Length: 281
Image (cartoon, rainbow, N blue to C red; front, side, top):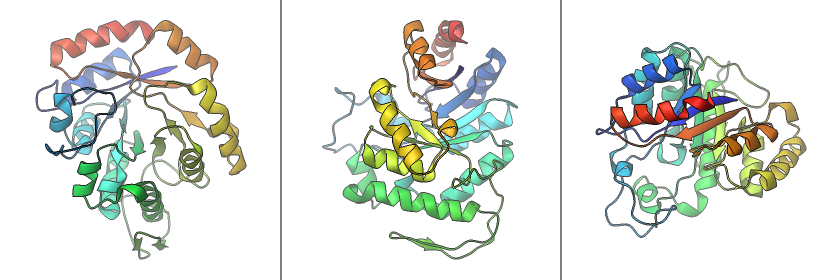
C-alpha cells in the first residue's frame, strides 16, 4: 500500500520545499494539499468537524504554488490537491495551471477535487450553493475539452469554450472517457456523487475513510453501470489518522493508497509525525 500525506501548509508551518524533500527521502508516495482562498470572519456555516475552525484554514498556502515548489525539488514524489475547490475558479485558467503542473512534474499530479463546505467563501466567488455540484461537473468537462489532443469546443449549462489551441497538455495520457491528470472526487457517499465519479473521474477521495465497507459496493455498481472497467476504479482514503488495524482493513478492501494527516505545524513537529508514520511505509 502506498502511503501519502496531507497537511495544511501555511505561512507558519514547515515549508513545501523542506517537507517535499523529507517525504521523498523517506519513501512516502505523495503530498496532497488543501485549498481555501479565504475564510470570511462573519459566517454562519459551521465547521464540519465541530467546534472552532482551526487557525490554519485562514492561512492556507495556494496549493498550486506550493506544489510547484515541491515538484522542483523532487523527482518521484506524487503531488496532489485535497481538495481543489473547482467551483471557485475560472475553469480556463485552472485548466492551464493543472496542465502546467502535470507537464513540469512529469505526470505526477493528482487532481483531488470537491464541492466545499463554506457557504460564505463560495458566495464571495459568485457560487450558488444549490447548484455547485452541477457547476463543478460542467467545469470539469470544460477543462477536459481544453486538455484534449485536438482543439475541442465545449458548451455547458454554466459556460463554454471555443475549440482552442491550449498547451501544455497534461503529461498523463487519456484513459477512456477521462482526459487530464489522475482525478479523484471528494465528498460524502451517495448516488449523485458516485454518478459524477463514474462520469468524469478516476475514483473517490473519501475524507477520513469511514464507512467504506458499506459504501464501496454502491460505488462499484455505479462505476460498472457507467461502462467503466472495474479494475480501474481508485479509492484513496484521505486525511486518515492511521492505526495498523485500519490500514489492514483498507488493504482487505483492495485499497492501494492512503493519505495520512500531518499536523499543521513547524518543522520539528512535522518531522516527529513522519517518524511516527514511518512504521506504515
